Amino acid sequence: MRLRFVAALASLFVLLSPAAVANAAVSDDPLLDQLRSIPGLTVVSETPATGYRFFLLSYRQPADHRHPSKGSFEQRLTLLHRSSDAPVVLATSGYGLAVAPRPSQTEPTLLLNGNQVSVEHRFFRTSRPAPADWSDLNIWQEATDEHRIVTALKSVYSGNWIRTGGSKGGMASVYHRRFYPRDVDGVVAYVAPDDVINPADSAYDRFFDTVGTPECRKTLDEVQRQALLRRDRLVPRLEAEAAAQGWTFSGSIGTADRSFEMTVLDSVWAFWQYSLESDCASVPAATATDDELWEWIDGVAGWSFYTDQGLEYYFPYYRQAAAQLGWPELRFEHLRGLRNHPKLYTANSSLPPELRTWHNPLPMIDVDLWVRTASERMMFIYGENDPWGGERFTPSRRDSVLYVAPGANHGANIARLNPEDAAEATATLRRWAGVPAALSTLSVSDLPLDDMIEDRRHLK
Image (cartoon, rainbow, N blue to C red; front, side, top):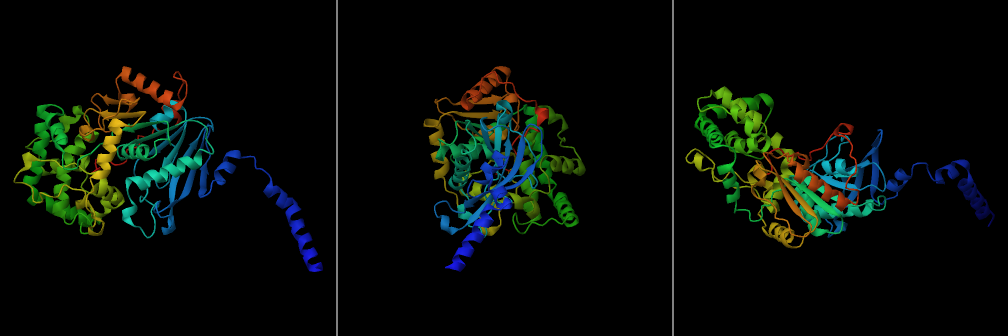
């Protein structure tokens, strides 16, 4: 009995000691306390700043939300904090965060003076279960990742939520809204393709038949023709460059010849995705030298991309495209008789054999039908000259809208709309977010503007 009494006194002394009292006291950083109190959330680091706080966070997610016992992984995210009662913008590129993330703001964040949560898509960079079951990489699992993050952070933030993303991130925004429509108060999806029936891609062919001027289209087609006609000289050049740079092909695309052909096929798409019509003057003529063709294609498409080293980071995207998202299938009629690999232009072609899979068309059909008929408060923004706008989402009539930025490419946003549309889009966004329509915004110089588009031309 005496020993128990002494032990109790010792425990009481520990509990009442100055160090214990100090640790138990409420800290002078309520935000940090709130974040640390969220189960599964880890504050990895904070970057000192003026006017906002920037955190790198990690959130424990089930590898399979339907079977949580199968294991978990740490999903990276960042938090740009301005105020606990300001709107929150949930953003993703649909890919990974930077290795060392830095504070930046999306366009909706800028227009709302809001907070921002940026999420790394599952299976990119370190946000991947180990071992990885690639069947867990699908649109519902990622939407559920984001649903859990929103649910957790609503304990910190009282304002409205806006979901946004560009390109693949725009697609992810739509999927999140589809499965969890009450998570956020509106969606701004930038340049998000809707490949509802994967083989039915005539819209992309019609785009390339009409974009720009006839002269520009003819010159671009001829660049591809000339490159394939000179295959006997340019493929050895690629092989020599690969040897010098340490590039390999056998783990994914297969051979240098397949890599060469895929890069040539991609070059015109890449031109319209990130160039302007005024850049047509820089396209090499049919009489261009091998050096001129090589340098131009390298500048717009990149000879290093369709290599094992260039593709590895994008394997999760190509797996998703092959399994659910779909990919553009173009006719390339002007290249008949010049292609060595007529079935090459597919998502599976860029994957290692063990990751290749069959395509399930049902998820995209479901999402497309829901967007057309049942979605609410969704804004879609496309660029007039962006190939990815060839197949667009069609919003419902439930407080939803679609805008096209004149002459814009894959970088289309609200700022690139005509003034009337930009004013209307901004007012709609602010209404959804519950902030005054006349809210004064920060200047772009206060923080870098994140365009949310990481994928270059490689969304296929």
